[in-house]
Length: 344
Image (cartoon, rainbow, N blue to C red; front, side):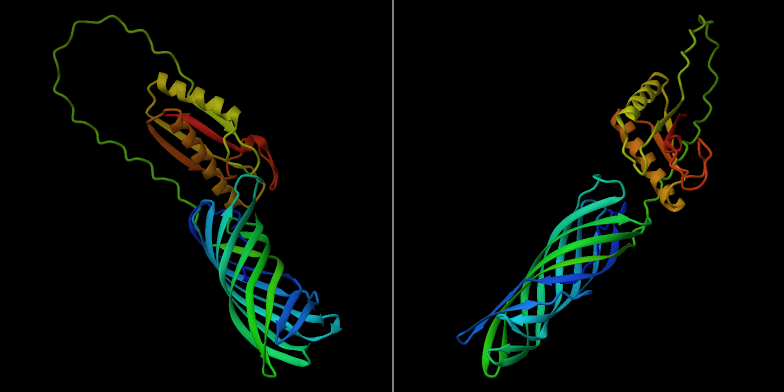
């Protein structure tokens, strides 16, 4: 069935938004039973390439769920009918409403997905002969359903390469020739490769909280009696760094140990504000790395809040512009995949 985008989106989008996709590939119909007016026969099909095209427009909610409207076209020549050489072809144009579920986090930059769809199939039996000594040239509009399996791999922040399998089943259609009506089934396996373009913009960094207005100067109080010198407060560590795996914003167990220390020092020193600055190495596009470093800052912020820090947290993203270790372009340097934590 129709031109479906290989999503899965692809990889899954970081922010909600629309996408479009296109795919071309191979269509392999199952043998079609043809019967009517006492006639029983079966059609077998040639394997043509390309024999399927899918186009879809969808919406990604930035979670595991996506919905899309898919337009498709499939065609195959008839090779034989009941063992006898045949001519003509079967064509199917479909309009399907699909629901898809993205399986995130299994493989970096690759998002498998699965789903199902329902809709309509316009099946055309185009000059197919011989059927009971006649040539059938007719079409019918019938309900259809499909199952979908696929995967999307990120090429850039907004473009995914996709591969998809559809198993489409259309209800039996009725086709007339020489005063006789015949029923024929249409079931097919479709394999396509394509591209999906995501229109969603990356989430902007949150605005820092405004500085509180200065309180008015209190009236001078009488000088108190001298008090004993207070013991100096213990010095606290104010700078920490946590590191990330390549192309990942998942906080590792080692990084969690560092975050617990940082939150502990923040509580000891009555720290009211923490600044988180995300970085990336030079592998991948600079725009993608800027978004990746922001996701790393956001992931650390989530864990710091979960550890009980209730002060102000500012997140920043530097992408590949401020490496800890200077490298050339396209280098996977572990020391550069980091978030710097400053207790302000």
